[in-house]
Image (cartoon, rainbow, N blue to C red; front, side, top):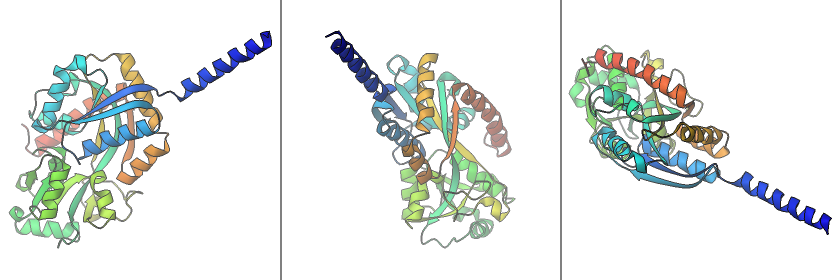
Length: 322
């Protein structure tokens, strides 16, 4: 009888350990997206949440899109309702630095809790599948003839990374970057619609937002801002191949509300690091042409401070800030 009880206890304990081993690391994450559907922020948040859920690293995931103010509305909401946002991660990227510097909104990354950088996404210059532009040099020739007739859509405000990247590209062709005719749309989906409808001739966006459409023949990517061709998109030339020195990668990462505990941040960092080892993540990353760029909270914060200085210098050179 004693042996039977012992076996039962061992059996129950083993079962308990098995259940715990299968339990998710975090119960819930609510992802706040500071822009519309279809953009890079939206894709990153939903893709990350989906992978975390499917790989059983979290039990529940939810998403909320909150457009407005170049991302400022969502940032203000996260800060003002911090007590109710203990399970919320807001996705953001280089624009949080750029828009703070340009005064689009009064807050900066310092007003929140940086959690982790996730990926880098190179920028892409895109045209319709039936566009007369076949190469970057074709665009340069038209711009030289008349800058006003080359309209460029972007899924974010003037002075944003979509704008800065294309302005830098034309600057590196010895044009005045302020002559670039950039048309801002609320989110990548609306910017893409403008390109496809003929409202604009070009689209400046993240490679991850357009790579699948390019493979399907719906649009054509003229060039990317990578230093060399990417393994996930070997057929797409880089600007450097045309003698243009523009190289830029837009990081994307997550921020929490101010006042979130260090223990909570460590939990998030732990689960995000585990995510990188899953086959679901590798599939998502390669499909979107992203580059792994994981930086946990301490490194991420130091990186943000460094980028603030770099972007400030570039924006002053381009005349976007004094």
